[in-house]
Length: 126
Image (cartoon, rainbow, N blue to C red):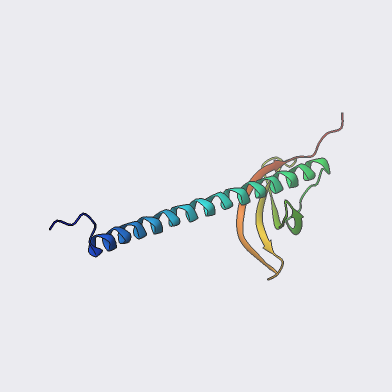
């Protein structure tokens, strides 16, 4: 007599293959979600850096040495570390900005999110 159904072994093999495929797809989905989250965080950090540069230019801030501060922006608390270096021109300085995520619960700075370099110079009145 010929059976028209699947044996238990065939069903178990099919379920094992499906389980492996499901685990792989779940891992891919988790990596995609993590990647998207990191891109959003880096984009927010870039906005914070650009805002800080704009404030320095508006206020005509001339940085001496290094400076650190925490701000709240974009729904996060950020640590902004600025350091100035002189250039061959006395009226131009190189400013390095390091933007990091600040964990206020632990009171610690997490890894740096973005780094930006710009050249600062005093504005001349027209």
